[in-house]
Length: 130
Image (cartoon, rainbow, N blue to C red; front, top):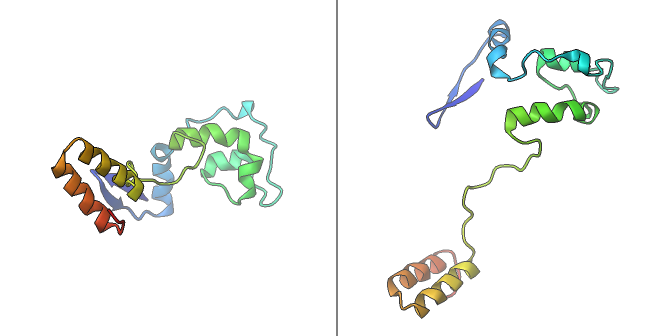
């Protein structure tokens, strides 16, 4: 199990019985009312049922995502705040050479030569011509 505490990665190695004990707070699925779901629904590839997923908190094969799609979306939303995977991305994207050149041009027009020099150096550092 991995946890992030104050920006530091902390790893825990637990036995199966300890994992079962901690599962209650690891996942935010409050004892779902299975009566509102078609619990007879079952994956044809691996045989997983929704009830088994709720107990194990784990899918068994890629086809499970398609079979349980309608039920999984709210669960994934509660885990990840989104049901769409967008990958990791930096909070701010680095500026392209063209963006830096535009900023350089604007700085020169404003006669802000200190900023222009910094931008010129950034452009040179990433291989663009000023």
